[in-house]
Image (cartoon, rainbow, N blue to C red; front, top):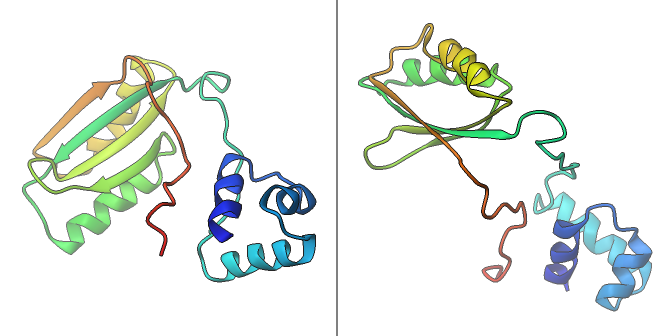
Length: 150
């Protein structure tokens, strides 16, 4: 039952409890209680509104692969602080393999990315920064697969 509720909420977090309850075959109060339990358990972490990047002029996606020679905690804390204040960086991952970190950046154009790039490298010791511009978004979803829930 929780999985059904989560599937629906991942599609549209604005569903009213009455509509959700009807769709999953519960009455409103038990459905509301299940949602509250999922929130309290940290399964539902927040509800957000997804914004069309084109409509807010950040339709260019850039994947930035970062390599460093330094792997100390102090270096990481500094790099993280630099990344945290750049709003165009919307995702930030520590990687295995040849790349140390991967960033997803959204900007209106190459000139705007160049400004982000300059902020990123200004005060950070990096050995390599490689940028790849997405030509086309083939698939994008925020919905997580729920078939692994035990």
